[in-house]
Length: 365
Image (cartoon, rainbow, N blue to C red; front, side):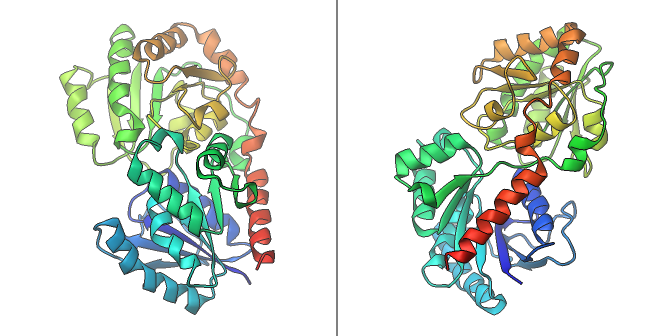
């Protein structure tokens, strides 16, 4: 059988990339021999549930300068490829793309750079732009999450069409096909994600300050963990929101959480294709998001199954949420149309695209 490998930065943490790889690797393991390499981290996060057939290798390297990581990781990964006859390797996210892209020059393995971010939102960051450029040059294929990012790669890096494509993250068919009734009686606003700068929790706090005091029966629940969690909690306390803006921590299973939410809010500065927004959509929750460069505008149809707000316009987002709170009919109508464009995110359709991609790479040998 064909041996394929996913390489991640650190499997001891869990975020959108790790969850996407978990789902994809488990699905592909029914057809291929799947390997996973974690460059950092001394354990696999217990919340990640990989199939028993998947082979996991923890390099357990210390973090340091990116060039040092490239040197330290190169030969262990190259040796693993040779020993296990890895035919295709998927480098997950920008730093791993930089660390792993030279492997394509000195091994027989086909190297695929999977960019989970938004190209233009970080274009002015020279370091990240150079990393993406190097990865796109040395890898055999580049996979991005949106058509916008694909077009930007072609325009700014002059990548040929045959070398790049976009594949969405997916929603499980079992979630989509299960009958769901929107909980119109719920008075919970929901946001979930790691507490990192790009997720926009500083913006969320400003919006919450304009929403929750006007709607004392409502609560805003935030699920997740991360390095900035305590900082944002302290800020919520300083604003007097600690009884209505509830920090719920990390949970393994979000099913009950989604089923009991009334509105989902995404305040991010940048995204690829946000998995949480797809999941909220699958649970028929009306969504509100800043209309950042990539991601939300390929999921939300503005004013049809959710709302897209001018990026970082605190007043407009707060006004939109307040309008939805006092108008249950609006929420119900948005929920009724939540599936209007859902088929392009179905697991079966996205999985087929991955299989076609892998077969193309194998046939190009």
